[in-house]
Image (tube, rainbow, N blue to C red; front, side, top):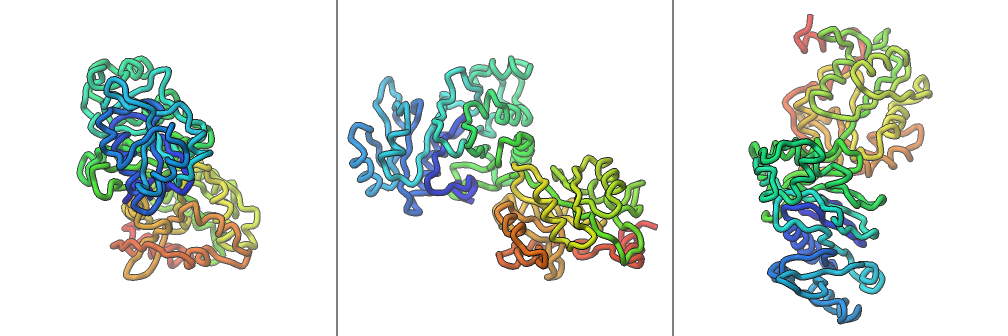
Length: 445
């Protein structure tokens, strides 16, 4: 996956890179990607970079040449770097980007807004970072090479600030949760981020496979506990396709509002296993797959369903039209109840008790790896549940008429089908016979 796709960059973006462990290489890689697609890309720094790093830029010039000359350079080179001068082996940037934005017709502006003396991990000093207020995307950077390095001033930029804030032992090897704590902290990784800017963290030097990638995935999930962070990209700027995966917050909407007329009793409250109801069992499987937040849509026997959901730590929202409306109504209510930082939702049937965490993982990993924004499990060429729907499609679901169905939106767009080895994605519980059969398939008496 390309950096542009991982960061979801659009024309007019002002991108600020902060942190340590690959800011300049990320700037050049991203700028080259965009330039290769025909974009006119300006880059600069609000601090300074090493003089030798200018050699990585296809063209570098000073602002005093004027807007017309800068525009001409963009037309010729597609990617140009602006600096004010060189002193002591450092190329210095500009104090304000406003005049560039007002005077030069670039498609994107990328800014190195922080310094780290080429270290792989950092906490900012009081004067750092220098993020322009016009910034629309902030990318806090850290390198996975930091893991295991001693937490001291020789290996970590401003290590003492991290020690003082979190109480970590000086000189101790850096652990995965420490990286996450720093990147998601409002005084460190999120310091100076403009209110309207998106935040996508970048874990550089992440291997494409193996244990280290799993550690990076753990760091990403811990970072995403901050609702201020939209996504965390994992990969290496040294690769032709730099990004291996993008972890985003994926929630779930569990549809549990139905009347259960064919069953004759409320099916989501029927006993399943280990003292749990069907609903509680489903919520337990989602917890094992680390899906959070989860919203349960209630309707019939709402108080009992709400109590079961809350015992499992899920949120609830009531669909007041449950008696007359179809599934669409409950889905609309559930999606609207998810927090704003959720990027996609798993649509989970409340009567599908054999849902499996490994299937949920497969669906979520396909989304993280950029295989698609609508992802569904498939068994023997038949699409099942849960289906993952990216937020970009939610408005289409809200706009459907009452006579519509979620599949009306899903069928308008390409769906990524993930082959699974279990028919549990196809089976639900509608009748007493279904209930007995599904219990038997699950090995329950």
